[in-house]
Image (cartoon, rainbow, N blue to C red; front, side, top):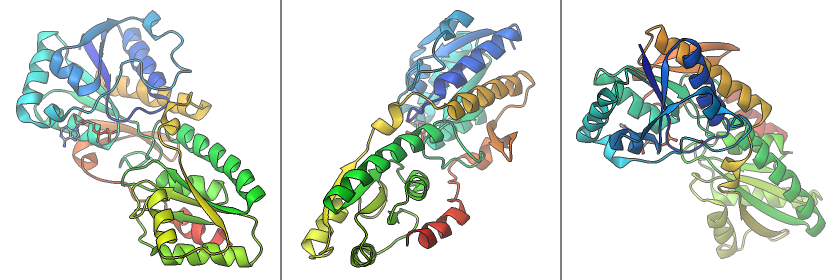
Length: 323
Ligand code: ADP
């Protein structure tokens, strides 16, 4: 292999830049030409490629987001779109591609690999729902942002004896809500994976009020049956939560944009560099992730369309610890 390309796709995640940098510099150290594909799969279809040198990767490790840009590209989900992408890659003399992204992006990587183009995926999503890695790039930073917000909200909630419903990201996956909720000492955690009636949540908060709690923090995953505002509305309409005054807060995109933590810079570097080594060694059609402190590769056929379950111990602990 002489020419290797890298792209970032789907939702951006802090630590993606560390991964790009590691791919590029590892590839260069093996004597390859490195190419950046801009704006994810859209850039692949448009042929938006640029040669990258070691200096292009200077001072990016500490930055959130992705210097290559990212996009959601419906055209890539069509066969014609992917065929055009493969023609663009061949046209530029590129012989291998590294895809840094989450679930949807790795399904795209799998589809491309099935067309005979060598691809290696890098596990990167703040949702941590990707099968094939214990932890993914961006999770630690997003969790810390959510946790700081929860800590701050708890202070003001206590001053006013309020119940605050805090909505955190994670489309179909409650990982961020579960872990930030436990680490933040939330009174209740509402997840898409566990369907709980709003009456039950209200009862739990009310019980806390009656036991003299100064506040209630409810961490709600955005993909749950009722989001934070939806729950507030429901409580109002049904006259629930008589004790506390209540408010909702949506953390939204602030969870994505933060500078990567040390853990995410190291993970991005480790996975990015390992992905370059795997593709150079000819181990393609795999996702590079980590398990039990080691690098692992999982065939993209097993990764595509699969969601990693929530960690069962924490799921049980959430119930037990919110007393
Ligand atoms: P993430 O990778 O963060 O989960 P998305 O789910 O939005 O983000 O996926 C990113 C992009 O990956 C999509 O816009 C699309 O271009 C591509 N993609 C997603 N699913 C598939 C699929 N089944 N086949 C081909 N491409 C896909």
